[in-house]
Length: 196
Image (cartoon, rainbow, N blue to C red):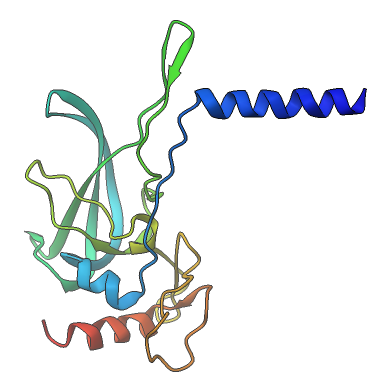
């Protein structure tokens, strides 16, 4: 009986694999130097608006989300000037909800986008906007760091727990993973940019 159950379970698994297309997102792990080198804009700030929308492009409609950020530190890039404040808009493709048609359910094949929340503070490394105005964070969750802590003692961590952030770089006392001081990373970013 036990052999029969195992055999049925293996057959079922093999059947599912045969009829289900397997898709995976391969994402290159990037260190800080690579994140900065691939970023059109690098800035930190607080998310003050989150707007969901739609964009018609290439014969299809994409779900989008636009994050409006009040910039507190601009390392690289151009920003909107609104009085005394600098503003960055980041318009990204949003994960769409599953669509059911009869007995079939269609899921998005897009990779997981960074989780960005209203009212939270982040350090962003963003790509240049596409011809239709879409952008994202470099390396997806790798280029999106949540900032927490009291002013002057802020810590930041990306969605990969900063794993590999200093891989191959000669940075003294750099942790292999986990939160790091915002001031320390800001210093590293400024050194990498060297006034660029």
